[in-house]
Length: 155
Image (cartoon, rainbow, N blue to C red; front, side, top):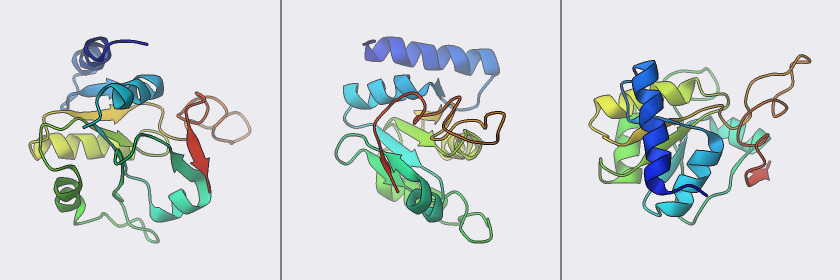
């Protein structure tokens, strides 16, 4: 197990390397460790309610999991209340906030938006919950929270 400082240093290194406009990026394993080491941290799942119902969700510490849709289902329209819901769910803008989606696309957008809105410790969770597709078009086979063997609950 890494220390909180080591995890945050790795996230910051990725921030610098990729010129990210938010606090940094974490691997699934780093995110899980950070959540264990920092009880105030929140894992904000930005997938749709339908994705949670059909695919499942990560299992993390009590009160650490937050679901806020980035886009609405059906239709894929942006959630106009995203920032307000984030402020309400997370509270302090210096709370570590780890954004998660299916394959780390929407989570990046959420991290950028959160940082623009004053969240100083906004992180993208690399690989997402299901990760990239394999050669047969299946997810959970090459990367992501599930593939990495981290705890989750199926639909």
